[in-house]
Length: 416
Image (cartoon, rainbow, N blue to C red; front, side):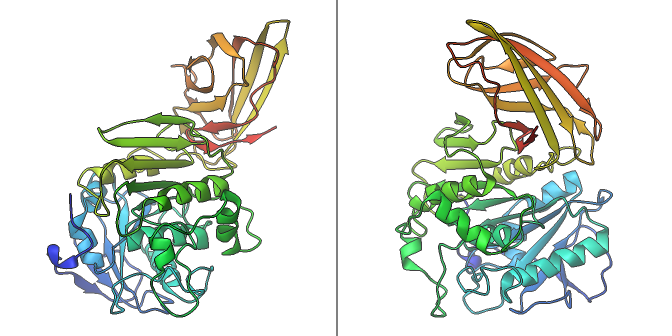
C-alpha cells in the first residue's frame, strides 16, 4: 500500500514550465502550465501528454490528497503509464494554500462557477481541450482522500463536463460543507452525517439549479477501517450517486474481484455501470495501491476504442405476448448516440416470477432477476441511429410485463 497522505513519502519529479498559450506541452514530460484561465484560488496546473496522443483525446483530471501536490500524484500513481498505453491526456491540479487540501467545504466550492477550486480545474480542462482538440464528452476525474472529495464536488458542480469519476476514500458531495471558513468538518469525517438518498441527491442538484442533462457515472472505493474519513461515508456516497443517476440502491450485481474486496454495481452489471462501489475489508484510509488505476481506467472506458453510450445515447422498446404461464418478449435497442457501438451488453431486470427458457439475437444470463443480454457475433456493431431486435421466451407466475428499465454497456437507456 502507498501511504499517500504524506507528500514527504514521495519524491516529486521536476516539472518544466509552460506559458499560457494553449498549445501541446512537451511529450512524455510532466509540465506546469501557467496563465491557463480563471483561477480564483491560485491552483497550479500540471499536464502530462504521452508521446502518442490519440486524435481528439480523452482528458483525465487526477486530484491529489491533503499534503500532496500535482507532481506527487503523478509520481505516486500509474495514470501516466496508462496514458502512454491508451493515449489520453492528464491534468494534475495542485493546491497552493498552506493546508495543501482542496476546498470541498465552502459555499463557493459547492456551486457551479462559485469562485473556488472547481473553477480553476474547469479552466484547466478548457485549456487542454483547446491545446489538444480533446473530446469534451470524455472528461473524467479521479482522486485520493481530499482529491476524492474534490472528485465528488467536481461531478456535482459540472455534470455537463465530466462523464465519470472515481473517488478513493472520499465523502459525498456537500458532506464537508461549512460556513465558518473552516476546511474541516468533524461530523462528516467521523461518519455521522447521514441523509436519505433523496436529500443527498438534492445537494448535488442544487449545485447547478435547473440542469436537466445527463449525470456522470461514479465509482467509489473505501476501506472498512478508515479512521480519517470513516466508513459510513462509503454508504452515503452510494446513496447519493444512485439517487443522482436515478437507479436502485439495490445492487444489480455483487462480486469479489480480489480477496477481501466486495464490489457492488448499481443500475447495471458491466464494467461501466452507472455506479460502482468497492469495499476493502480491514483496510484503512491509505487504501490506494498500484494496480487500482487500471480498474479506474476500465470503469471510465479509457482502455477501449470509444466511450460507453451515455444517458440519451440509447433507446429501448420492449413488448410481451403472454399466455397462461408463458410469454415471448421482443426488445428493440436503438443507438441514439453519435458514435458507433462496437459490442453491446443490454442489462435489465425481469419482473418477479419470470424465468427465461430460451432466447434469440443474444445470449442471456442469468435466466431470472438481473439479466444481461450479450450481442451475437453478427449483430454486435450498432452505428448511430441503427437498431437491433432481440427476444426471449419465458415462464411466468402471473406477472407477464416487459422489463421497465434498460442499460447499454452500463449506461441508462431511454424507454419508448
